[in-house]
Length: 332
Image 1 (cartoon, rainbow, N blue to C red):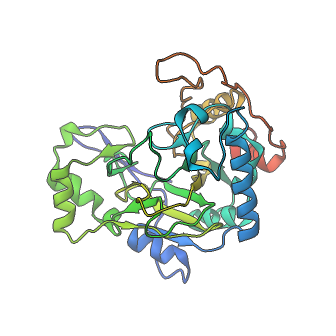
Image 2 (cartoon, rainbow, N blue to C red; image 1 turned 90 degrees about the horizontal axis):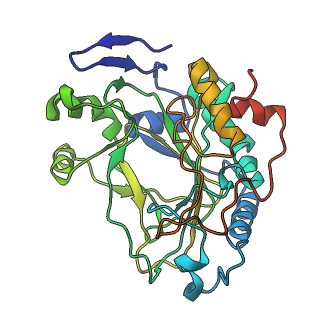
Image 3 (cartoon, rainbow, N blue to C red; image 1 turned 120 degrees about the vertical axis):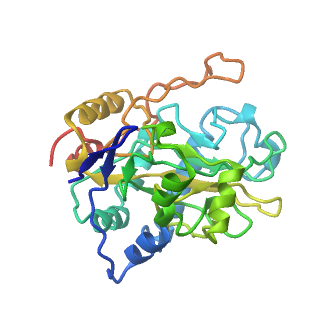
């Protein structure tokens, strides 16, 4: 379990896992570089089936959206997306295809190896569909950040992308600074005032701060992957969502999913997790902590509720014991 120690600004919590190295598999890269790609976590053919199910979902809102016609890839033809190209509303978090992907054996096995237990919780996280070269939505500038408070030292959270589309050099994919997780503590110790630290598990870096990472030899890379691959990264790794270039014609399709040991969740976190599940809601990238219900109602740019809003999934998942345990509804 984690340990804590006080500071002038608050309490530092140490990570729950002692990294020993020499694993002989993807964990070596994960711990050394702060990210890794688990190849073929889902068989390619099945990953493409998930892609099609996601396409069917986004095309189910009665608009003239045509996945093969870029002229129809407009905001008015799409359910409401965040600025990050994610879908968080309409009950999509708990659609059957989302839960089926989360419970893929290869995905669960990877996280079980990371945490050295198969008694896991999973985050209620988003679906990302990024359409390239949209005329009504120019590419977003980078927003380098981490998803872990400086009050937390060591590895507390491993984030995941279940990749369902080709991600080459020109396509949308995760951008990260390899090895930045290993210098996370040094950055906060030398470049910040602890009195300014926040407990919120999200911290963006300014251009000036990014110069410090560059001075340490850190250069951003775009993670390349294929349908069925699982991208993992330490929440201390500086990262952001990389936009497709104007040379890409690939619709990016990914499911965000983070898993952590059920033993790390407090009674209060589990109670909130159950409440969010009952509301078919979304949480954060964390599975055992930071549990709170994100806004459920899809709103149009003018603030009005989208008349296409849904308060439950189009196709509900099968409520197996495995799902209930991953969701935190019943104990292991």
